[in-house]
Length: 204
Picture 1 (cartoon, rainbow, N blue to C red):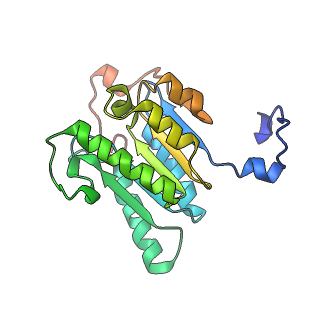
Picture 2 (tube, helix red, strand yellow):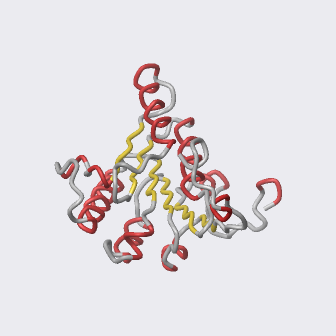
């Protein structure tokens, strides 16, 4: 793909513009660092284009801090005050999905993950956002908390022009097959290998 030009052009009857504007399903997987970081970078570009952004973090604890959260919340406020960019929503499973009215509960992670996916599916059907980040979503799929076949069917058949980015290790093979863009982060070196703990500005 030299200089961003496709090496081959499919005989699919689409114009260059139609092919360029197709929605993207991206998967960032692998053992290396940077999966979520890359996804949030894509979301930042989407925001700059005026695309409504929604982030769903499938984590067990609301105490897990992600540095990008504060930045995106600030961008959402900037949009409300000036009209720049687009609206931003940020949801954490560990603090209770806002639509379940169970703020602060962590009793049943599997049920919470399923509730999160059901809300995402509803929003996809309604074309509520242009860019979705499903952070660490590979784990509920791997653990069987959410039905993989249903997820893939919903993602592949989502209406409109909605971009979806999924992150996490061990992405299931069917998800990789269904995706348009798959990146595997491979760890070659990491400071933790030398006994160094995570630090501000790097891990959060």
